[in-house]
Image (cartoon, rainbow, N blue to C red):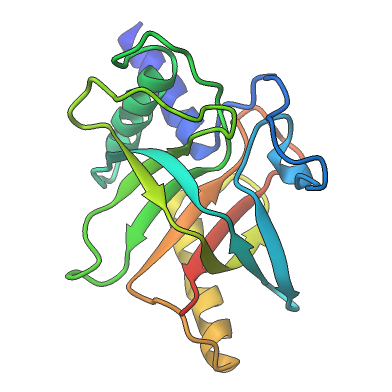
Length: 209
């Protein structure tokens, strides 16, 4: 049973849990992107559409994060996903369940130091104004200020190697256009559960300077 659970968890970290949830409480004027499905996701404004990537301005957001240990078999991702999933399903100071959101974001340092270690994050939905504190010492809440990012999207089932390759392609495109960005890390964002076969959506982000 434990092996079966770990395999399912590993599948989940390739995407996210797209179970049906109530529509998020976001402004009526904002048109949520199709790739968010029925789940809440961060609000952004499209600054410019380039040929192979986008420039977006995101509003300030809140995330629940946990360290991520990178290993060949992906067991670190299973453990990180499990910690975050336990938090949103009730493992916190207040027994309050939080809806699943997208994307699941993984912070990937490219140069160490000073980029730091990898983390996995769940977006805290807009409807949760005062999220409870986690009880797990390896899980914590973190606020991200409004930021401008360059985003490259791609489809299909994506392993870590695919995200890394797409990040390198995006970095080359940004340099070729003379666009400044923080190249010490990138963010990999997954939007789909492992059972979604068609129209899968994945992204890599670089923070603009």
